[in-house]
Amino acid sequence: ANPGNPTGTYVSVSEIRRLQAGLPKHVVLVLDAGFIIVAAHIFGIGGIEVVSSNANVVMTRTFSKAYGLEALRVGWMYAPAEI
Image 1 (cartoon, one colour):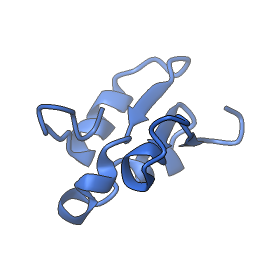
Image 2 (image 1 turned 30 degrees about the vertical axis):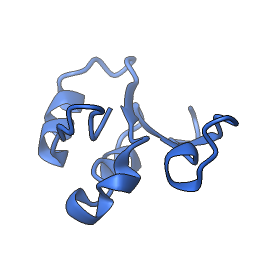
Image 3 (image 1 turned 45 degrees about the vertical axis):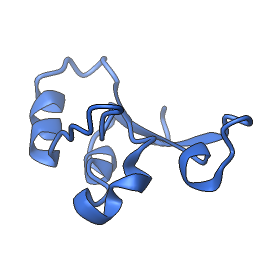
């Protein structure tokens, strides 16, 4: 999770890139950005460019945090077309 809840920790894009570079190509890195909406003004949408430039990275997001849809569990994923 990035940022982490409840800790508020944040993994930088450079650290995400380092993690992805060390993974075998058949392993998919999932970036859970469910809480980014509460911190985007501080961190930006960290990691989205890593998804754009790698075939084994996806980013998940949710509508529940920003739009009050907790009961519906509505989310989406940004990923390469192959995934």
